[in-house]
Image (cartoon, rainbow, N blue to C red):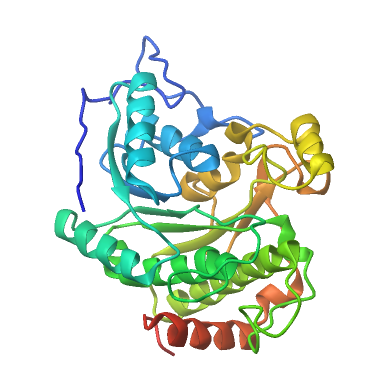
Length: 330
């Protein structure tokens, strides 16, 4: 897998919003929290999945602007390269690299993590952003239903295979991408997770995958805390963000254009979860506006099912069997 290192001038004196104040002092944090409140991240290594567009691109842009070295991991190699070229046009000082990672393939995940481990000895920020969203019934390379195979199982395996690099960082954080859609499904069905015996509905499949992401995040936090690990495991959701204008029927596409917040705002909860001083492991961050559809980031709550420890343990065991990746065993 080719890695194309891209480096430029240091950005020690530059602000997260791209400006450079005369006194070189970062502006004080604001209320509400905005991208201008990002701390300096010089010397930090970040990995963002699904980084070539939408939320992933905005998250990568923000982290790079704050001084982090960022690997933009994308399913398509050409798209990863184009995203890096565009980012460097906007942030010539950025320290970024494109990489190929298909979260719908356990083989691709293994190859990516082997290449990553050969290049880097630690990982400070893992932003599990990539997602299949409202796609027709499809199967991954491993015969998983596409939503849960990509959104949950792909990131479950990726996180496990990079966990020792996260442990090698002094204050690593994991940010998993959730959604308000986790409330729009009857619940997880680990007896038929891949829709082989029940009717397939796109929203149900998407909602189940995001419920799995949240359930996994809470279980990951419990297992890390039980071992006294300093790694912070969080989840964040973007609200109603205009990241996929072509999805859904005509009404959905029109609603997205009229009412959704832009990707730069949708990225704020993940950026807050990744960098804010007052974030604790197990926190769930989302927009603070009406029904969490838009607005500045704040702590939000999930449905009770996601926080069920018995379900978390069951999902963990099922995920290990499905992927063959084992870590943090009880």
